[in-house]
Length: 366
Image (cartoon, rainbow, N blue to C red; front, side, top):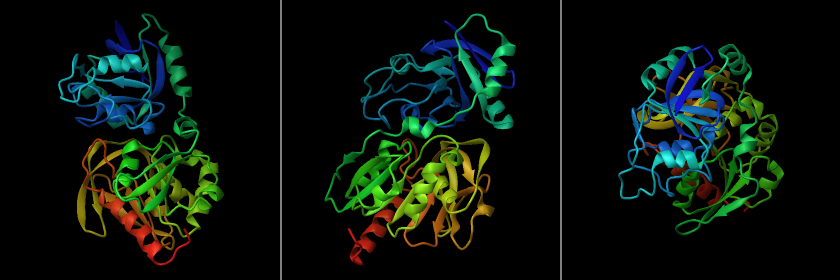
């Protein structure tokens, strides 16, 4: 079946339908990863977005139940150059095409994803419509694309009830994971380090967290514009004013920055992929990181009495991390759990665990 992708700038791409045949309107972004398509599909940070995979062959190793990063896929649309009709891997449990259909994800293949990526890179991420309709009014479609906005995504992806995951080794700490769209592997990185993790709904009041007997707090990744989460930002400020170790990633990094007086801005086309170089200013080393974000903390808006920039993106100089003057508090824009992607920066989980151990040894109230 023929499918058509229409961008807000008027560009039209024709191809073959894969997955669902439902019409989708969403924000179109591109990802440069060569692998990890299942982790991308199930990453809650992609809620409200259509993902263009710049690598030309997708689906060649199939799908399985172990690689999901959340309870379901969140990508609205999926655009590839070529979808492999079968998967070849010892862990393969099915093909990607069937997976897209089963989860009602609208997709298209046989598209020049190189040309599409160049448009999004030069003109910025933009809204698009993916449809299998044979006839459509282009003027009406463009008007609809102009008015569409991704909103209220954190409430959509966050779990409704607390959920606890026990450590996979000697259990030493209990971490409150504020679920703004958390990836499961972030939880697994803590479990492997002796942490019991309780994932809490995004709307959980700070008072509930602070009275829960936790040893540390993580602010998770998640989708959308960080500045729209005003109620969450208010609660995060209360968490910051406590003395519990605090570690934020991606959206959590942005939300804590906003809670402490900094500002965020939109990137032209975002950072999405598994090969982004980031300089750790303290270590004086560059690490290759996995990233997925369309917004950034504005470095010059950070109060030097509150925090200092700890990591910088080598490609464009944007802020990739903050170390706060308040003890045991740091955040990163990139994903240290890196599924899929390089695991170079998992040392940050060790830093967080060390902060909890240090506080505990000093007689903190647990």
